[in-house]
Length: 504
Image (cartoon, rainbow, N blue to C red; front, side):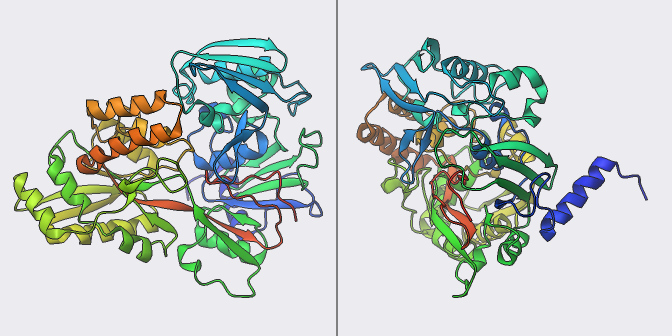
């Protein structure tokens, strides 16, 4: 038997204990009022500047406050910035900050701390640098006022500050821990990081000096890593978990009247589908891409695989976003037209391609349905499974044919479309490019009026529904399981669990 390092042994032991509901935290006593939340993935780096996982965003919400937040309707609301003004030319943002707020390590939150965080977010090593690249000048007016000058109008700017780019870390802690800050997060949020058992739990304790009166409502939060959605569901039913960030689709319509849990099943901001590599045959011809698009029955996928817990889609804009429009209505399946398109592209005899999928069982089922739906037009699909990191590398390198990668969504529509389709965009794995689309999306970035912005997005989508660099399948719903003993849950369409108001 090969030697197993202690760290790996403890990680596996922790996973088993968590799955069994036996591990309740590193420091919280059994009598403490604790919210236990299951996560389907183990958060990696607990530093917003280094984050690329939605599981990390779940934990961040408890540790870090943001400059601004979202409400239940997706509207931007005050947080650490209690109010703000925007200049007439939409290039200067003045933020007026909460007073008397302190980080968990006792250092004051003020305008200098905001400056530190935004400059840090712009550094080359930061994954937030593209989100903050338009900040040209930062001026600390006084302790509670900061002025941000942009190089160009950028309509999504305040929206970006509702997420990781707007999360505030303690400057002292960042300097103290250096590269190890990813394991020692310090914010101003409702809970204080106490430690983790990798692969098993992350434990937080109540911030006794939290600046929002009466919050948080409980003594601590424990995140339990449970990659199997059915294990998490069983822990919810048994009371070992209070909230799950995933819920088995098949159980949505199978909840008994006397159940001790309920389901949050509401629209999200994200989308799911697959890229087509436009840089090489057969998807270098738009007729071939459109043929694939109109062969897929999205309503059938939503019903069979997701038990109705998704919205069939044809765009990156869900009903939770102002840019949602007619383009989001899925086309009717049309085998005859698909065959005509393939004939026009010189593919009358059909063709074959490889579709790379995530390793999850739901996406495997979607892949099998897509496989069957394309077959009547002579298209043969080979399914290949890969981990997300492998998929992303293939997308960046352009070494795939079809690539099933979704997006958890952001509150501003720009962040759901721009980098995905603009020429040389960072998430444009399809290698698509069209100057007219680029120009429309750039105009949408410069326009401050949402009605006028929507018109630009509508025009861009009129082009993209024919060009089909990405085959949109559905918009995920926010789908959480929640114990009936939990009070104060707030649904927010970004799909992230806020813990400050939770009570038991």
